[in-house]
Length: 392
Image (cartoon, rainbow, N blue to C red; front, side, top):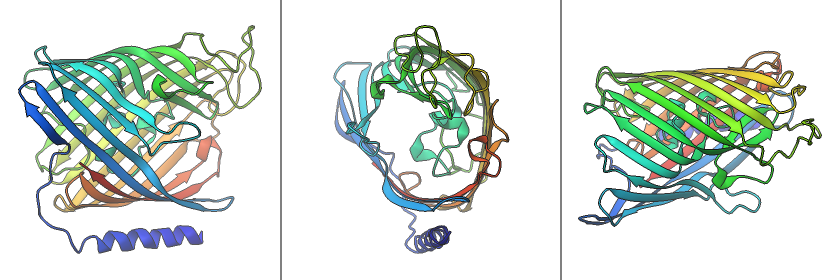
C-alpha cells in the first residue's frame, strides 16, 4: 500500500511539474521523410514509451517496475508507383529467447481508387479500440474491448482490403489470414503467427468491419484536439477456426492433457462501437461479445465452463481538455464477464494527460481500480500507470 500511495504522489507531482514548461508550438505529423523523389520514397520513425507501473493487490505484496512498454522503430519505403512496404518491430517486448517482436510487416498496393490492398502482417479489422494506435490512446493501457488477451484479434498474417467512400463517410475492411491463439484457460489470447511460441494453436481467421461517420470522417485517435463536432459508429465481426496443426494440450482422442491450459477449437465475435468529439470532449464506447470453444468439451476453469465461454465486455472512456490541446482529464469504466466467472471483472480509471506536442510528446498517468479479477469475487487490485511517450 505504501508503494501505491508513493506512486500516486509521484504521478500527481510529475503531472503538475510538467505544466510549467508547456509551450504552444505546433506538433509535427510523425515520421521523417529521408527520400521523396517521384516514386522513390523512404520514411523512418518510431515510438518510445517509458512506463512506471505499480500493482497493489488486496492480498499479497505490491510491486513496481520501470520498463519500456513499447520501443518501436519502423521503416517505410517505395521504389515503384502505387507500391509501398513497411516493417516495424518492438524491442520493448523482448522476452526469453525473443529479442524483438514483429509488428507491422507488409507490402501494400495503393493503385485502386479509394482502396488499399495489404499483404503481410497487419492489424485484424476488429475492435475500434485495438485499431486505435497505442500512441493515440487516452488511458495508458487499453481496456478489455481492445486487448488481444481477452478476445480481440491481434495482427494476422494474410490479405486485407481497406476501402472508403469518396467523402470518407463510410469505411470498410475485409481480411483473411492466419492467426494464433496462446492456449490459457484464464484468457483468450490472440497473437500474430510472426511471434508464436511452440504451444500456440494455429488457425485461419476471417474478419470484416464497417464504420459510418455522419458528421465527417473521424479518425481512430482519442482526444479532441480539433474541437470540431464529429461522431462515428462501427460494426465488426470475426471468426477463427483451429487448423489442427498444433494442439499441444489435447491427445489423439480429443481429451485434455494436464491442467491450466486447453487448446481452443474455434472463436467467433462481434463488436459495436461508437465515438464522439466536440468542444474538447472525447468519448469512446464499445461492446464486444466473443464465443469460444475448447477441443475437449469437458474443460471447466478460468473463463471456460463445460468447454465453452462467451466473453462479454464493454468499455466507456471519456476525456476533456481543461487546457485546449494541452491538459486533459480522463476517466473510464470497463467490465468483462465469462461463463465461468463468479462475478464480472470491472476496472474504474481516472487520469491526467499532459500534451507537449499532441500525441507525439505526452505524459500520461492513470489510476486504475480493479474488482473481481479473473471473475473471482473480492479479488481486487489497484494499479498506477505513468508513461512518457515520444513519437517521431
